[in-house]
Length: 256
View 1 (tube, helix red, strand yellow):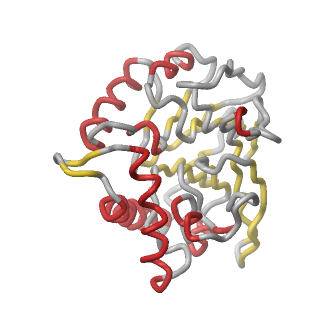
View 2 (cartoon, rainbow, N blue to C red; view 1 turned 135 degrees about the vertical axis):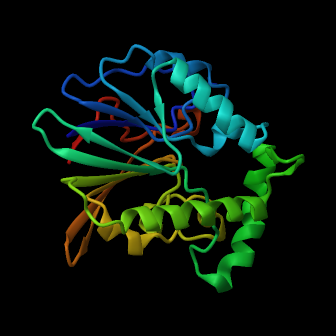
View 3 (cartoon, one colour; view 1 turned 60 degrees about the vertical axis):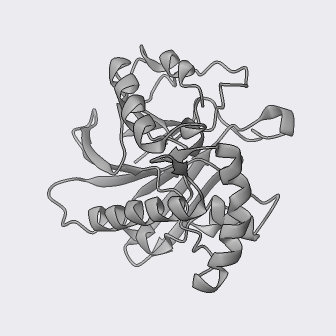
């Protein structure tokens, strides 16, 4: 299957026109497309099916639970498939069955282990204040994010460990990154990096391809394991005014 990947377009402020890749069979939107949701309309008449995983900024200034319901309704109206702790089976033009496993994942702040968690959560408070999100009338703070992240991880681990019932390949889509290997080279392994990357390295061998966003830099690397290798790709665009988006490929197509 040939997948086009876009993320972190930030169309609430960025001037950018997404372009369809001619040979893609599926478009993957890996989050932070538009915090105001309006630009999702640009993908309503896309020439191939569109799968969307929400990023953190899709929840800015909103109750995360109410927003999740409303965002799904909006995506449905636009014929976009929003996935959160869900899997879908797609059959490509060659008849191969591709399992798509998707969740925002959020940050559990365990990137540097339990001993580094408290420091990582203190660093993460800055980003949560920027989000200004709530849950049940209370701030969606680092504690609430960690709680949601662990639910996501438990689901993801269970789904990836399911016995194969006929799929030929597995693609994981998360907004948050699965490994410190995806850290932004501008900042490296700092406590704040735990707000962007999770330590999901042990889950990588269960996927053929892992797509993510959130980091405003591009990545394309392979992690070798006993079963072969997992390819991890991020094609974020980010904020051009900050000099981000270097290496972003508007019509990037990945084959799995």
